[in-house]
Length: 235
Ligand SMILES: [Zn+2]
Image (cartoon, helix red, strand yellow):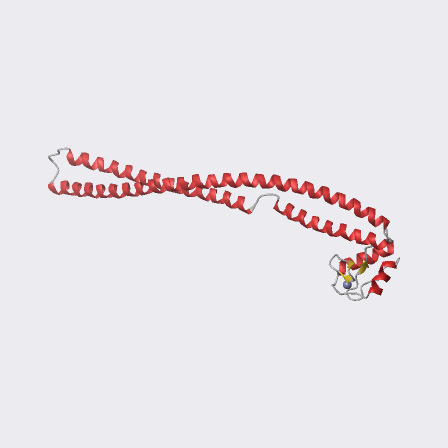
């Protein structure tokens, strides 16, 4: 294998390694709890809190109904117990109080009824949110399984590529390897450019046939006069 071909193969491996590295990073970033799952869980918690508030309000209004009801009974008891000592004025006041309490009871009952409707609606919301959470959890678990499998595959492929890379690096000329590494950093990972039909594939500039032949025969490195990349002319 020509020395330049080793560098070219090294570049293929390096580009592949870089791509696998990016994919691995992406997979690893998606491992763990997803924003969708967290949002569904949060919505469920909020739904639970809203239902609890609704139930507390209902209890409060039910308590108010009972309290007014109790007072009304007391007033009615006094009102309807025939007591000859009671004046008309006292009776009239008691009647007014009873009327007022009746009004209050009506209002409290209306509030409690409205609360019941609202609790019912909140319970339906909560059932829907719990269903959505459970669906999000199923989807998330499946996704995590897939991601874990992808991660394993990528790690295996990376290890294999790294083995190949160290074999190739071992075969390469050490001085040429230094040039390759330097150019790789400058040229966005593409230090070596194949020559196809007298065209440098690095910069798409066409070369004189002579230059192509020189590059093919050169045991050392030939560089593209336009982009400065190492030229690789396949046989
Ligand atoms: Zn070029």
